Image (tube, rainbow, N blue to C red; front, side, top):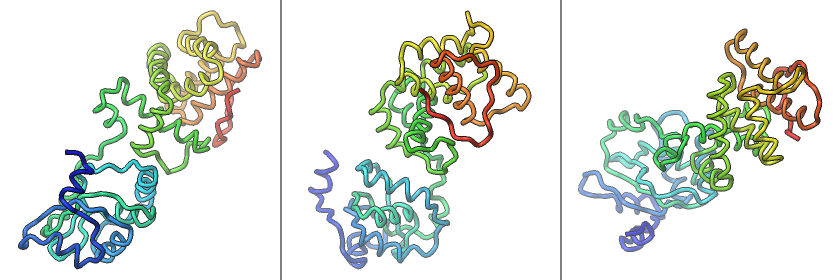
Length: 292
């Protein structure tokens, strides 16, 4: 039975008052579950009963708001949970998101739970985008997920990759649907990293995605030479790139992720301009330049 039919056939409409909601969930004092269309006004009223909960995380609310507004909010079994007195035990972030989005969502709601069960809620490990891709049998799921997060940030205009806002799994899934070529970028990144292990696969894959959109043939050649360095003369930008990341990693142990991408962009731009580059330097905390 489809979700839409389940809601319609069982007549789980949206209650308009807390009294109606309590009546809907009443089951002789025993826990019970219903599917309802949670309207913003009801979410707001339920938040009045959110008197004992963990601190609200604004970033989580914003993630949910974006998913709700984009229509990426399926009925997945997650529930708003209430205790025997009607107080909110779990779901405050979703309730705040429904209010802020101003959009109803179809959700399970569970009532009649003992208050002490709150301590055991949300104790499991949250599924990541990589987990979701793996469950969908996506090859190179970890690398694809990492590239998707960086490409999403790039498209949001974050050229320093320092913003705390991260894409949701739904946003990453939509981005992969829009740019399926990211799968190929992940493959090239994995291959290049195996030959030259001094640049993270996510940085290689993000750079490949950006460069491939400009010139696929030159992009293929570029990453082959990043991997093997074959046939490059003194002063070639790719040699400067390989030398820089090798020496910097040996000296500092770790290079900031954005700097990895910046090094690749500077080398790529120099190759495109047929300009020699004997030494590659990037000033700290500068935005990653646009590839040409």
